Amino acid sequence: MSIQFDGKKITVFGGSGFIGKHLVSKLSKYNCSIEIVTRKSGNNKELKFLGGLGQVKVKISNSFDEDHLKALIKGSDIVINLIGILYEKKNQKFENLHSHIPKTIAKVSKKVGVKNFLHLSSLGIDKNSFSKYALSKLEGEKNIRIEFPDSVVYRPSVVFGDKDNFINLFSKLSNFSPVMPIMGTPKIDLDAKPFPKFKFTEGVRFQPIYVGDLVEFIIKTSFEKAKTYDLAGPNIISFKKIMQLILSAKKKKRILLPIPLIIARFMAFFMEKLPKPILTSDQVTLLKNDNISQKGFENLKKKINFPKSLEIVISTYIK
Image (cartoon, rainbow, N blue to C red):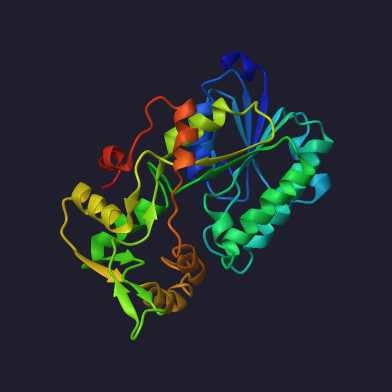
């Protein structure tokens, strides 16, 4: 594996994010050069220290026209696209960041002779036809396949690990809130006769994948062609169980409050007005379906010998 990376130039779009930092740090163990392209203009000095002296370079770019991208990508052997958002802002829209920009990056990569194009998508997007997030991700995959047919696409479930977005969000919530939500329960069966019935569950289910396993899988499949991988961790975990794991790791006690999706949507209407919303209407739409895949775990096991579970890792980074 190390021989394959020797002398290679790798360009990572979105490399300043949670998954990006872990991936660059892992890639830096090989004899390769890495360029991180990021839209963030803040303090990026820490990114350069993810690798050896001079191994990692950072380029700030908010322009994604073809000519500008050619200058960024030219000479690269591998291009990795990790660009993504969880909610929209005034100047950051799902369609642009998940569909249009990846299409242009893939198109330019093909034109300048990039050998391998890797793209991070998301698990379950083909089951959420009413979610703007899911539709934009799915459209992005289709566009990439057109522009760079040999690309490799990764569809992970919820990704956890140090500085993650999901677990840490609810960990912070537990610091000041007396209650913790269990999203997606009870479910309301409107077709039940003679009256609608309530079915109590432990909420929507996930199959979280450890960020270290994800980036290792990406690295081990970097030179493959025309593949799409669903990826999921070893255990299927309910929303309730995740809240319990967070509270147990922090040695806190909180009330666990079931929140049906109809109430969650009402809450999201107000929350999504915040600069960094805890919940949006589009995310509620995604919560209608479990985010699990047995095939995803089978894929992971083929490359990762001992996939890590949330239950084992959570106490090492939650504070």
